[in-house]
Amino acid sequence: MPKKLILIIIIIVIIIGGVFLGLKALKAKLIKTSTQTLGVSVKSTDVNKEFEFPVKDSESDTIKIKYIIEKAEISPEIVVKGQKATAVNGRTFLIVDLKITNNFDKAISINTKDYIRLQVDGNDKELLAPDIHNDPVEVQAISTKYTRVGFPINTSDHDFILHIGEIQGDKKKINLNL
Image (cartoon, rainbow, N blue to C red; front, side):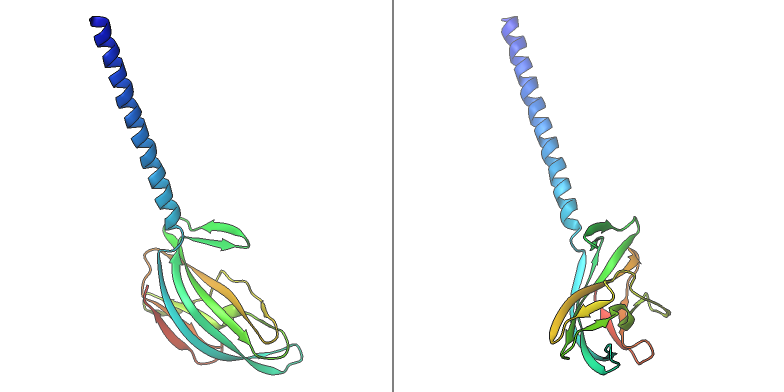
């Protein structure tokens, strides 16, 4: 009888240990999965605002391009030149999706970062230029090109306003509800 009792106790301990280890492994897997999905985007907003800007082509002809702000999002991860980049602790990225349309019959190159600035926390004295971009962006004749620009920001930053316009010209302001 004592041998059977010891055997039953050992089996019960093994079963309880197996259940405990299984639950611990499941919890670790759930935490890992939720962390991976957090990297996609924290907040985003559709903007859908269109602007036209004059651009000189290689022969000094002035043409107008459409510069469309499609969406803005805050994300702790971005892809830069095919490599994933993660923001350091206390920082994140504000990414702006752009659509550039060239209705001219020749390809053009444009520095998308020259038409956008970011105001943070009501400070209109220090406008930020995008540090993350694909400039110069080449837009083929009679076509549209999708691209993005990004601003490294603090996670504590809020009240974002985009200033859109030529460097020396008037700017339109877009409040981002992020």
